[in-house]
Length: 230
Image (cartoon, rainbow, N blue to C red; front, side, top):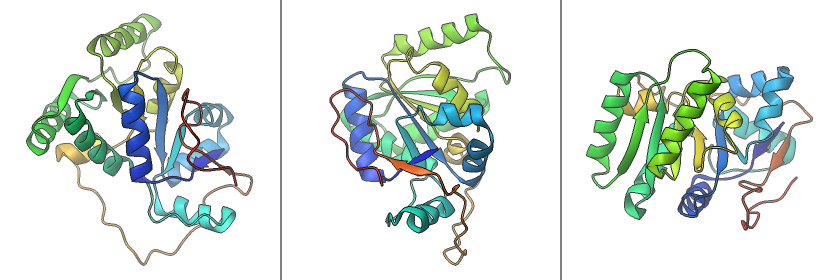
């Protein structure tokens, strides 16, 4: 599998630009659990390797990039923080966002908190899907609802691996940047607290030795690669 060697600022620029152009793209942010799942599950790994961006969500993932590939990233790219920064940029630049996942109470709280934080934000839609695999008809209906809003960014909070499966299955159907952000909905809604980062945590090797790196958004038409393979 491949991890994107990138940063918050780089991805904010790329995602907002792609959203404004109405381009489809896939992004996920992988901590240790997701990396291990992808390393041991060929089907899941196949899907993840089709994503345009696979952000190093956890510090151990960032440390492993440094150990294996001599890539010294200044910080991880944490899904909840990525969502927060993108919502701020989207509010400033008039990009509509869609929230897909979690529960109705969490979505209601999340919308209220985001509007309070970013008064000009355009939340063009939000829905809590059934906690099971959708039928083909249900999936197509969800895609139609999302596309009908004109959203440029679709935040997906279904948990790993369900959110990544949904995004991958609809990669050619949803006309927006899909971002799998896991528990970000709960954190920003205030229903869960983010765990503090322990700066003294010892680095752990979490990437398989054959893991590689990738340039972010390499497959978006017209985008210049921002970093190179190592």
